[in-house]
Length: 250
Length: 153
Ligand code: SF4
Ligand code: FES
Ligand code: FES
View (spheres, rainbow over the protein chains, first blue to last red):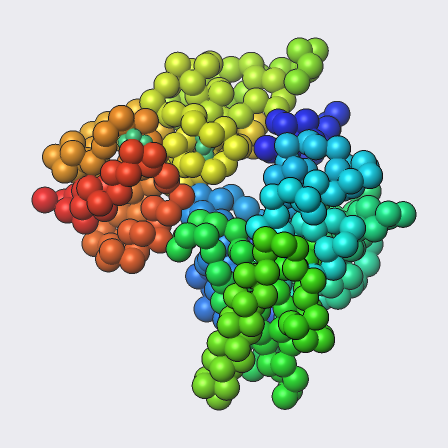
């Protein structure tokens, strides 16, 4: 809605998709129309996902916002929201690089330094969940596309393609930790999702790259901008705590 | 929004009263309540889903009317602050002096009513979790919390 109002998104026709997108939890499958509020108090889903939902947005937004909508939210980059003609809008400059970027990305930030805002996406990447659309089945990470000069899309969803459901593999232990500007109702400065399945631990971060970031290398490989190196310290601390929490709960 | 948009007749149930109105597609619930139905108790501050001042209940659930399309709630029951005028929560806010300018108050009361409907005696943590989406620029939070804690007194 705000993007329509501000003219960043234009629409000739508005379609109510609530009739075709499933809502509710059915075993390991979650309808993309399920609200974050419904997930926040669902005892049967992994801790990492429930906690990511509980710490996301505000109570009213969790009542209104769906899982699918949350995964597809646009960047919070203020230049983009204010319609500065930046690279993500098709221009040839990233204003965040030289300008205000304390909330921006510390990884993969050379072309566009926007920070992916979805707690839930990080949780699902850590869980290695599978998405079902009306056309295909894909790992959650494949929904996202790192914008670059010749292809500036941030997701791989095609026109007419709808997210329908998310399939969760079993997780033995999982946890979500989030650093925010204030204690509640804020986007993640850094969010750390960790899940262990069959002896393999996957860690994914929100708020550190233009897409949800699966940690494969070292945090020391980060490329922070002049005024957001603090995020590397925060990520280091949260990853350490998350891994310790997985150990403890054994 | 172009003015040529068709505006189908819409049936809207607010505070147990059924209204019929013509609203262009793209009209928000807040606009319909305030401009078409003259229910101006619902306040719009940010108009983009951040502050909570426009909170109403849709089928009992706290919802931001500024980013809800009115056509999407045609089958629902909407409750605004006007529909809660006799609720004890209103008296609790007055008694505890839980406001300064009062602009956020209708939204605060709507969220608080939903909270105590589900949890009649909420703990401090429950109050803070449920009220996190209602910002108060006057900083009346301690008294708002107190009003909710003591609403049945
Ligand atoms: S970070 Fe991305 S969205 Fe923000 S100004 Fe740079 S190119 Fe645009
Ligand atoms: S006016 Fe609706 S959230 Fe601020
Ligand atoms: S009393 Fe003024 S904004 Fe809350």
